Image (cartoon, rainbow, N blue to C red; front, side):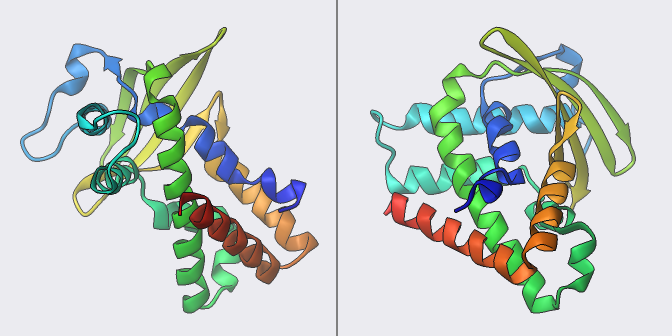
Length: 215
């Protein structure tokens, strides 16, 4: 894969996803649940705890296949990957046929899911995310958090909306930079310089390499 593709939005997503599933702390009132629907911070915290429990229950450093599958589902269920895929293509989404859209969602989501998992397993013990505040407006929400990394503290903003009655993250804003917007700019530039067909070809090759490395 060329240097341009290595700089795609996948890197921006993967670089910070591990903090979503690391052990987290936040204000006590953040964990308050509504009658039928958890608050956004509670939703993120509950996902953190379940994922951590799966890892802690695994013997040794090698995860059994059943644990890997359960953990991957737990990590990735927090995201609305079809919507993130649509945001990634931006205006080019409307130019695609239904079959092309389905294929892009399948390939793009599979890459993110696999890289989410590997990043999470590698970094989860280093994360110490702190959820600070949340803003809820009907079916959308923003959660503001931070995580210390080496000598700096990274500010993270989660953009969520509800899907089938549950919160899902569709964008991460890291130190003021939107992951979805960054993805969209990079993919747009790549399509303009090459083509959509070339983009999907490169992504399919990347996905195959991920399959091969995990086999």
